[in-house]
Length: 306
Figure (cartoon, rainbow, N blue to C red):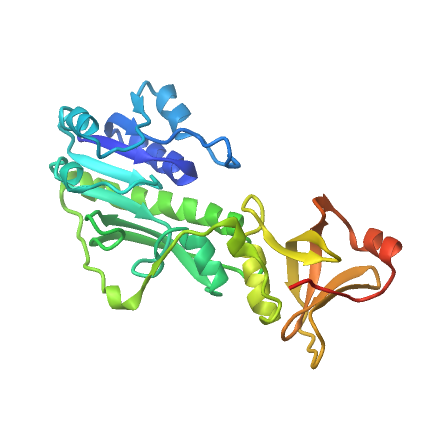
Protein backbone atom coordinates (compact mmCIF):
# COMPACT_ATOMS: atom_id res chain seq x y z
CA UNK A 1 0.00 0.00 0.00
CA UNK A 2 1.34 3.42 -0.98
CA UNK A 3 1.68 6.02 1.76
CA UNK A 4 0.97 9.69 1.10
CA UNK A 5 1.08 13.02 2.86
CA UNK A 6 -1.64 15.30 1.52
CA UNK A 7 -1.53 19.08 1.46
CA UNK A 8 -5.09 20.19 0.74
CA UNK A 9 -7.80 22.80 1.11
CA UNK A 10 -11.07 23.86 -0.54
CA UNK A 11 -13.46 21.71 -2.60
CA UNK A 12 -10.73 20.34 -4.86
CA UNK A 13 -8.85 19.23 -1.76
CA UNK A 14 -11.97 17.60 -0.33
CA UNK A 15 -12.83 15.67 -3.51
CA UNK A 16 -9.27 14.63 -4.36
CA UNK A 17 -8.62 13.41 -0.82
CA UNK A 18 -11.80 11.37 -1.25
CA UNK A 19 -10.32 9.82 -4.40
CA UNK A 20 -7.13 8.80 -2.59
CA UNK A 21 -9.15 7.16 0.17
CA UNK A 22 -11.36 5.37 -2.35
CA UNK A 23 -8.24 3.85 -3.94
CA UNK A 24 -6.91 2.62 -0.61
CA UNK A 25 -3.99 5.04 -0.34
CA UNK A 26 -2.57 5.18 3.19
CA UNK A 27 -2.89 8.90 3.96
CA UNK A 28 -0.55 9.30 6.92
CA UNK A 29 -1.08 13.03 7.43
CA UNK A 30 -3.16 15.90 6.06
CA UNK A 31 -1.67 19.38 6.05
CA UNK A 32 -4.33 22.07 5.62
CA UNK A 33 -5.19 25.67 6.51
CA UNK A 34 -7.15 27.16 9.34
CA UNK A 35 -10.21 28.95 7.94
CA UNK A 36 -9.77 32.71 7.76
CA UNK A 37 -12.64 34.45 9.62
CA UNK A 38 -12.43 37.30 7.10
CA UNK A 39 -13.02 34.94 4.16
CA UNK A 40 -16.42 33.68 3.02
CA UNK A 41 -16.17 29.91 3.61
CA UNK A 42 -18.45 28.46 0.95
CA UNK A 43 -16.44 25.30 0.33
CA UNK A 44 -16.10 21.88 1.98
CA UNK A 45 -13.73 21.24 4.89
CA UNK A 46 -10.70 19.04 4.23
CA UNK A 47 -9.99 18.94 7.95
CA UNK A 48 -13.42 17.53 8.77
CA UNK A 49 -13.07 14.87 6.07
CA UNK A 50 -9.67 13.84 7.42
CA UNK A 51 -10.96 13.72 10.98
CA UNK A 52 -13.92 11.59 9.85
CA UNK A 53 -11.44 8.99 8.58
CA UNK A 54 -9.13 9.23 11.59
CA UNK A 55 -6.30 10.90 9.67
CA UNK A 56 -4.00 13.21 11.68
CA UNK A 57 -4.24 16.87 10.67
CA UNK A 58 -1.84 19.78 11.11
CA UNK A 59 -2.33 23.44 10.14
CA UNK A 60 1.13 25.04 10.17
CA UNK A 61 1.56 28.67 9.20
CA UNK A 62 4.70 27.62 7.36
CA UNK A 63 4.85 24.04 6.05
CA UNK A 64 8.54 24.53 5.25
CA UNK A 65 9.51 25.14 8.90
CA UNK A 66 12.25 22.66 9.96
CA UNK A 67 10.10 21.03 12.62
CA UNK A 68 7.30 20.41 10.09
CA UNK A 69 9.76 19.01 7.55
CA UNK A 70 11.15 16.65 10.20
CA UNK A 71 7.64 15.52 11.22
CA UNK A 72 6.72 14.73 7.63
CA UNK A 73 10.05 13.06 6.80
CA UNK A 74 9.58 10.68 9.74
CA UNK A 75 6.45 9.31 8.04
CA UNK A 76 8.53 8.13 5.04
CA UNK A 77 5.80 8.82 2.46
CA UNK A 78 5.88 7.48 -1.06
CA UNK A 79 3.95 10.47 -2.43
CA UNK A 80 3.02 14.03 -1.69
CA UNK A 81 -0.25 15.29 -3.13
CA UNK A 82 -1.10 18.99 -3.10
CA UNK A 83 -4.72 19.88 -3.83
CA UNK A 84 -5.41 23.63 -3.69
CA UNK A 85 -2.99 24.10 -0.82
CA UNK A 86 -2.04 27.78 -0.71
CA UNK A 87 1.63 27.64 0.31
CA UNK A 88 4.60 26.73 -1.86
CA UNK A 89 6.56 23.65 -0.84
CA UNK A 90 10.33 24.21 -0.91
CA UNK A 91 13.17 21.88 -1.85
CA UNK A 92 13.70 20.18 1.55
CA UNK A 93 10.04 19.11 1.60
CA UNK A 94 9.89 18.15 -2.07
CA UNK A 95 12.88 15.86 -1.62
CA UNK A 96 11.06 13.66 0.92
CA UNK A 97 8.56 11.50 -1.02
CA UNK A 98 10.16 8.47 -2.68
CA UNK A 99 7.89 8.52 -5.75
CA UNK A 100 7.43 12.24 -6.16
CA UNK A 101 5.26 15.19 -5.23
CA UNK A 102 2.23 16.02 -7.36
CA UNK A 103 -0.04 19.06 -7.49
CA UNK A 104 -3.53 19.56 -8.92
CA UNK A 105 -3.84 22.90 -10.69
CA UNK A 106 -7.10 24.48 -11.84
CA UNK A 107 -6.26 25.17 -15.46
CA UNK A 108 -5.10 23.41 -18.58
CA UNK A 109 -1.39 23.89 -18.04
CA UNK A 110 0.75 25.50 -19.26
CA UNK A 111 -2.05 28.09 -19.49
CA UNK A 112 -2.87 30.16 -16.41
CA UNK A 113 -0.02 29.13 -14.17
CA UNK A 114 -0.12 30.86 -10.79
CA UNK A 115 -3.00 32.20 -8.73
CA UNK A 116 -6.82 32.09 -9.18
CA UNK A 117 -6.69 30.46 -12.63
CA UNK A 118 -10.47 30.00 -12.94
CA UNK A 119 -11.15 33.69 -12.40
CA UNK A 120 -8.45 34.73 -14.84
CA UNK A 121 -9.70 32.35 -17.53
CA UNK A 122 -13.18 33.90 -17.36
CA UNK A 123 -11.87 37.46 -17.32
CA UNK A 124 -9.90 36.73 -20.46
CA UNK A 125 -12.90 35.20 -22.24
CA UNK A 126 -11.73 31.59 -22.45
CA UNK A 127 -14.26 29.00 -23.59
CA UNK A 128 -12.66 26.09 -21.77
CA UNK A 129 -10.44 25.35 -18.80
CA UNK A 130 -9.86 22.30 -16.66
CA UNK A 131 -7.60 20.60 -14.14
CA UNK A 132 -4.02 19.38 -14.47
CA UNK A 133 -2.13 16.94 -12.25
CA UNK A 134 1.60 17.59 -12.50
CA UNK A 135 4.84 16.94 -10.67
CA UNK A 136 5.90 19.72 -8.34
CA UNK A 137 9.13 21.68 -8.57
CA UNK A 138 10.26 24.73 -6.62
CA UNK A 139 8.79 26.93 -9.36
CA UNK A 140 4.98 26.83 -9.32
CA UNK A 141 2.98 24.94 -11.92
CA UNK A 142 5.83 24.11 -14.29
CA UNK A 143 6.47 20.42 -13.63
CA UNK A 144 5.75 17.52 -15.96
CA UNK A 145 2.06 16.78 -16.59
CA UNK A 146 0.57 13.43 -15.56
CA UNK A 147 -3.13 13.98 -16.34
CA UNK A 148 -5.53 16.65 -17.61
CA UNK A 149 -9.29 16.98 -17.88
CA UNK A 150 -10.97 19.82 -19.79
CA UNK A 151 -14.36 21.42 -19.07
CA UNK A 152 -16.29 24.08 -21.03
CA UNK A 153 -16.80 27.66 -19.93
CA UNK A 154 -20.20 28.79 -21.21
CA UNK A 155 -20.81 32.49 -22.04
CA UNK A 156 -22.73 33.25 -18.83
CA UNK A 157 -20.96 30.89 -16.41
CA UNK A 158 -19.80 32.49 -13.18
CA UNK A 159 -16.49 31.65 -11.52
CA UNK A 160 -18.36 29.65 -8.90
CA UNK A 161 -20.06 27.55 -11.58
CA UNK A 162 -16.80 26.99 -13.43
CA UNK A 163 -15.00 26.14 -10.20
CA UNK A 164 -17.60 23.43 -9.57
CA UNK A 165 -16.79 21.97 -13.01
CA UNK A 166 -13.06 22.19 -12.35
CA UNK A 167 -13.56 20.34 -9.06
CA UNK A 168 -15.17 17.46 -10.97
CA UNK A 169 -12.42 17.65 -13.60
CA UNK A 170 -9.79 17.35 -10.85
CA UNK A 171 -11.56 14.33 -9.40
CA UNK A 172 -11.77 12.69 -12.82
CA UNK A 173 -8.13 13.39 -13.70
CA UNK A 174 -6.83 11.99 -10.41
CA UNK A 175 -9.17 9.01 -10.39
CA UNK A 176 -8.15 8.05 -13.91
CA UNK A 177 -4.38 8.18 -13.47
CA UNK A 178 -4.01 7.13 -9.83
CA UNK A 179 -3.77 3.34 -10.44
CA UNK A 180 -0.87 3.93 -12.84
CA UNK A 181 0.78 6.36 -10.43
CA UNK A 182 0.59 3.87 -7.59
CA UNK A 183 1.95 1.14 -9.86
CA UNK A 184 4.81 3.34 -11.04
CA UNK A 185 3.72 3.18 -14.69
CA UNK A 186 2.22 6.66 -15.19
CA UNK A 187 3.67 8.63 -18.08
CA UNK A 188 4.57 12.30 -17.67
CA UNK A 189 4.78 14.95 -20.38
CA UNK A 190 7.02 18.01 -20.21
CA UNK A 191 5.24 21.37 -20.39
CA UNK A 192 5.91 23.82 -23.19
CA UNK A 193 5.98 26.89 -20.96
CA UNK A 194 5.98 29.23 -23.99
CA UNK A 195 2.31 28.36 -24.52
CA UNK A 196 1.19 29.90 -21.22
CA UNK A 197 2.01 32.54 -18.63
CA UNK A 198 1.90 33.23 -14.90
CA UNK A 199 -0.95 35.18 -13.34
CA UNK A 200 -0.98 36.78 -9.90
CA UNK A 201 -3.60 36.85 -7.18
CA UNK A 202 -6.54 39.24 -7.23
CA UNK A 203 -7.85 41.68 -4.62
CA UNK A 204 -11.36 43.07 -4.11
CA UNK A 205 -10.30 46.38 -5.66
CA UNK A 206 -9.43 44.57 -8.89
CA UNK A 207 -13.19 44.21 -9.36
CA UNK A 208 -13.74 47.93 -9.98
CA UNK A 209 -15.40 48.28 -13.39
CA UNK A 210 -13.72 50.35 -16.10
CA UNK A 211 -16.78 51.49 -18.04
CA UNK A 212 -14.63 52.47 -21.01
CA UNK A 213 -14.33 48.75 -21.76
CA UNK A 214 -16.67 46.82 -24.04
CA UNK A 215 -19.87 45.20 -22.80
CA UNK A 216 -18.29 41.76 -23.26
CA UNK A 217 -15.17 42.63 -21.27
CA UNK A 218 -17.26 44.02 -18.41
CA UNK A 219 -19.60 41.00 -18.54
CA UNK A 220 -16.56 38.70 -18.22
CA UNK A 221 -15.35 40.64 -15.19
CA UNK A 222 -18.79 40.54 -13.55
CA UNK A 223 -19.12 36.77 -13.84
CA UNK A 224 -15.48 36.18 -12.90
CA UNK A 225 -15.88 37.95 -9.54
CA UNK A 226 -19.58 37.31 -8.82
CA UNK A 227 -20.46 35.99 -5.33
CA UNK A 228 -19.08 34.20 -3.42
CA UNK A 229 -16.21 36.37 -4.67
CA UNK A 230 -16.26 40.11 -3.82
CA UNK A 231 -18.15 41.21 -6.95
CA UNK A 232 -17.72 43.86 -9.65
CA UNK A 233 -18.13 47.37 -8.27
CA UNK A 234 -18.73 50.92 -9.38
CA UNK A 235 -20.28 54.17 -8.11
CA UNK A 236 -23.73 55.44 -9.07
CA UNK A 237 -25.27 58.67 -7.74
CA UNK A 238 -22.37 58.87 -5.31
CA UNK A 239 -23.23 55.49 -3.79
CA UNK A 240 -21.36 52.18 -4.03
CA UNK A 241 -22.91 49.78 -6.52
CA UNK A 242 -22.18 46.09 -6.93
CA UNK A 243 -23.07 44.44 -10.25
CA UNK A 244 -23.90 40.80 -9.52
CA UNK A 245 -25.18 39.43 -12.84
CA UNK A 246 -25.27 40.70 -16.42
CA UNK A 247 -26.18 39.59 -19.92
CA UNK A 248 -24.70 40.90 -23.17
CA UNK A 249 -27.54 42.42 -25.22
CA UNK A 250 -25.93 42.79 -28.63
CA UNK A 251 -27.11 46.41 -28.79
CA UNK A 252 -24.66 49.05 -29.96
CA UNK A 253 -24.35 52.70 -28.96
CA UNK A 254 -22.16 55.52 -30.24
CA UNK A 255 -21.14 58.75 -28.59
CA UNK A 256 -22.88 58.11 -25.26
CA UNK A 257 -21.23 58.21 -21.86
CA UNK A 258 -21.39 55.09 -19.68
CA UNK A 259 -24.71 55.19 -17.82
CA UNK A 260 -27.30 53.12 -15.97
CA UNK A 261 -31.01 53.18 -16.74
CA UNK A 262 -34.24 51.17 -16.55
CA UNK A 263 -36.51 50.55 -19.54
CA UNK A 264 -39.59 48.32 -19.71
CA UNK A 265 -38.87 46.91 -16.28
CA UNK A 266 -35.28 45.89 -17.06
CA UNK A 267 -32.02 47.55 -16.03
CA UNK A 268 -29.25 48.34 -18.51
CA UNK A 269 -25.71 49.71 -18.50
CA UNK A 270 -24.20 51.60 -21.42
CA UNK A 271 -20.53 50.60 -21.72
CA UNK A 272 -17.60 51.94 -23.71
CA UNK A 273 -19.00 49.88 -26.57
CA UNK A 274 -22.21 47.91 -26.33
CA UNK A 275 -24.96 47.60 -23.72
CA UNK A 276 -25.31 45.18 -20.84
CA UNK A 277 -28.53 44.08 -19.25
CA UNK A 278 -27.98 44.29 -15.49
CA UNK A 279 -29.92 41.34 -14.11
CA UNK A 280 -28.93 41.69 -10.44
CA UNK A 281 -27.34 44.60 -8.63
CA UNK A 282 -26.85 46.16 -5.22
CA UNK A 283 -26.96 49.88 -4.49
CA UNK A 284 -25.48 51.12 -1.24
CA UNK A 285 -25.28 47.54 0.05
CA UNK A 286 -28.93 46.64 -0.67
CA UNK A 287 -29.96 44.38 -3.55
CA UNK A 288 -32.47 46.33 -5.62
CA UNK A 289 -34.69 45.26 -8.50
CA UNK A 290 -35.10 47.20 -11.75
CA UNK A 291 -38.76 47.99 -11.04
CA UNK A 292 -37.96 49.20 -7.54
CA UNK A 293 -35.17 51.41 -8.87
CA UNK A 294 -37.43 52.88 -11.57
CA UNK A 295 -40.22 53.59 -9.07
CA UNK A 296 -37.79 55.56 -6.96
CA UNK A 297 -35.70 57.28 -9.62
CA UNK A 298 -37.79 57.23 -12.81
CA UNK A 299 -36.39 56.55 -16.27
CA UNK A 300 -33.51 59.02 -16.04
CA UNK A 301 -30.10 57.88 -17.19
CA UNK A 302 -27.54 58.09 -14.42
CA UNK A 303 -23.88 58.34 -15.40
CA UNK A 304 -21.48 56.12 -13.53
CA UNK A 305 -19.00 57.90 -11.26
CA UNK A 306 -15.93 56.48 -12.91
